[in-house]
Image 1 (cartoon, rainbow, N blue to C red):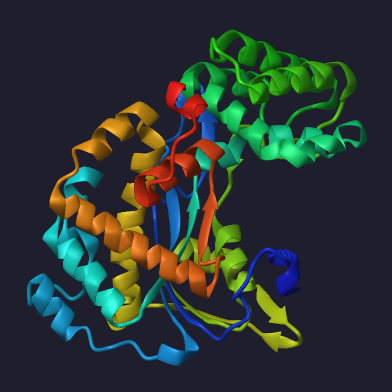
Image 2: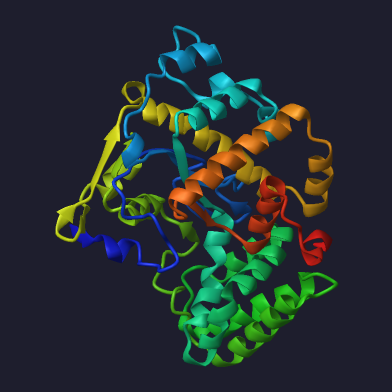
Length: 377
């Protein structure tokens, strides 16, 4: 099937640096294949952050240096065919952050002018944001598109704090396949849930979410993006995120690590940009050093973003105050990698999560102040 890149990645005037001839290497982490509602919750134990990304070579530095010296520096065993995160550092995020080998790896990338790129996805937030998205598509609610991110943030905050109860409520309504005769009851139950389990001290966004849900439960009989779906299937695959990245950088050449499920899902897609084919390939990582380096980047980022999602604001503040010298150094290096990559293209750094999560990450990496309402949550 032939499809225009602009259909898979809608043009956004806020983006820059997406038309250059990059060479992009990819790996992925925390691909759960499918996310489903079950009687006792979800089909997975934990919703870790899905990350798709890796390293980027620019037209000015489009040749990847030989990695034999890096292998030696990182003390990769001679019988190990690839560089992988697990050969460099193991354990939870705090332990990995303290690794001297991570310091050497990040430093090597910076010295060789290699950039990073990624999509970070909070899969639970992705699964429920269509509730607000569908309401905002209604004519009487178009105005909430101006602050839809704040509403989604509040819904996720309440849902994630009382997850088992929220998932049970969704499942009782066959979410995301809502019947028209059940839509108002679903919205009413969502409203009641937010009122019952929402924060004791409500900020303006919480109040507005309650107001919108109550009003919608009396007026809306069909939610635009929550019908004609498969009941209980929250995510049916991650192929859309691969296609989005291909289409987002239409003049780049994309090299993905082999992944059979994804390859089969997108094998029939020919992505076209101005009558030219967008080139993407699935390759064996053992033969592709760029994918090996991407394994380390994506593995690290997967642990980092999951850590950000799982750590409360106050705990994050406490932890940051007692970071070791090695941990602070690696944060500084990661900050440099992200800032330099963002300067090349702000779409290299692609976060699909909540406002709160972005604020926590910006605090941890870039020392930006956390709003009081986030710290209290």
